[in-house]
Length: 535
Image 1 (spheres, rainbow, N blue to C red):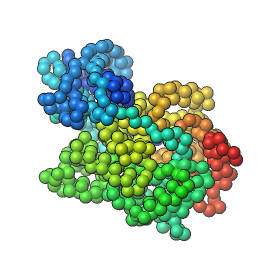
Image 2: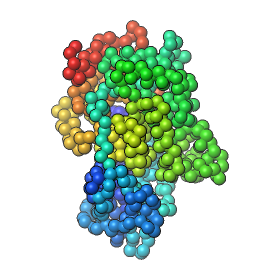
Image 3: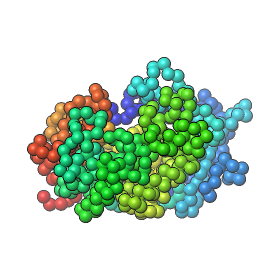
Image 4: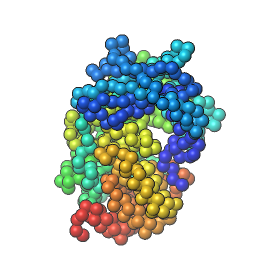
């Protein structure tokens, strides 16, 4: 079956995650309402397990941007409201609640949570850090670390901070009717009459550029797409660009600033919005800030990263990939720096927002601060997170992001029309429950494939009729649809990502007689029907 959910790909990993979230003392940003408005009190939820039992709990909070761990913070006590039995954890959970009073529009509420054990020892939420255990189990599953690697939880030296932003921000109206076209720049079009540099080694540069995107805007407009999602185009040593070495310069190989300006101008003339793919969770190991931090323990940037012998490469990196050191956005200066990068690109290029790579890495605290700063520059700026996790986890980002890519919906569409393991009745029932579970304003774009998974055509054995059924179902959903470049013209994948690498699904786009014109006509008609336009 699909490799979609990463840390939740197997039953064992699902169990590990569930049990980790039901151990120790856990808050996990669990608040109600999910998106606090001005004048609304906020209930803070906490659970504690018997492996680290607590007898009392309290929170400290500030509303002026200050650190709630300081002595002048306001306090609120938790009340024990229930005891629950969890069969999977095979233990009781104690459920606690506290309340933070209503606040004015624009307030950033910062808080920390502590609990006291019978022996007087104080613990802080979230401990043990559930993500540590899940990450370790996931890397074991995929072979990223040796099978005998011990699990070493992150020690808790001080109370972690949590926050939420009080506002009336909502997803911009334009996304509700959008059709998004997803471009992996290096594989889309070389542009200016050039040919591909090469097309056999998909782990190296093939030669697509932003000039090529500019040259093919008519194809995108004729298809009916109204929004472009461009893969990362900042300076990077890789072909994929997710290891960014400079957030304020466009990769020269892709055409530099002039080429992105040309894309923006051409897209605007055609009424097409543009989203850039921002990787805030990690940077390139060639980024000057990381190089300085890595070379000197006295570097001012050293606290922006997590170093230690427990990491195979000596520092915390995304999935232990050496070229992608994770940046600690809980550090105030690192957080401000990354927000400033977003502000710069909104102002400089006039883009319409960002698709946010590995959005769960920076976490709810960061996006609660990032979102209002972007909206202050562009009131219609869209922020879409890539969070490959359970629906309950995605829902916790309500009010932090405008929405998330809907991987659960993707799984339902692929199970029904690709793998044929679901019937349409089960899919409709799932979609009904799924839609009711989320706030109406939380945008969840649909897709049947993307640049990190096997293309739909591969799992459907290149059955174009199955692809048409999946696309028709997708276009009938209220979710904004995403189309991966090439899917509309029958671009076919040679081998599975499980047999090769993720690049197996990132083939160069077809721009010749090999295009499936019948499939392209079908897509155009389905998009026109979605928009209520005449053929």
